[in-house]
Length: 187
Image (cartoon, rainbow, N blue to C red; front, side, top):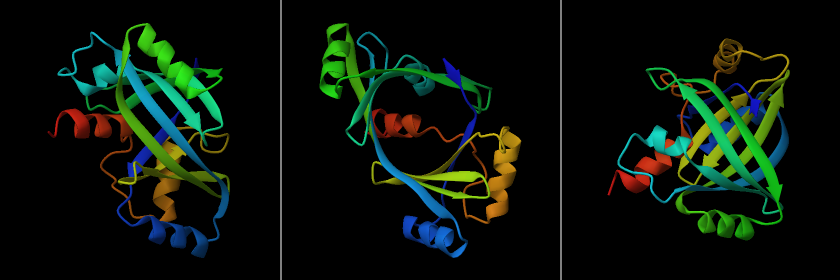
């Protein structure tokens, strides 16, 4: 399993304003792609329990630009405030998402949620910032560790120094939890 550090925050501005900010401040767009995740959970999991406990049991079928497909497991540990203290993932490439979905259903899993994440990656001075437009409804920024920004504290400080308008109350926004609660708790 590959362990990694990252922060994810909610943006308090529009995607167009954020892109304009990056352009004005000489950030370079280095990538753009779509991540399509379908979360599957064992049929016997109680969906009325803590969403983070439900999500810990999930296997994902991930497609990137509908070209590369994976079965994936995400591991996360949380503190008492639901901050992520350790996370990692393990994945195996598969031929296509349809076969992966059939396989999971065959072994007793059911579809839980879908997340379509439109991602644009901008870079300046070694800081890579991913704009994540989730399900055409939520806007986040994610920063993953690299050699220069290899601690949560360095990533937070770098993000703060950009001047981007974001919600500073949560550096570990959980996209899957938001989508889960939207589907199963807000009926």
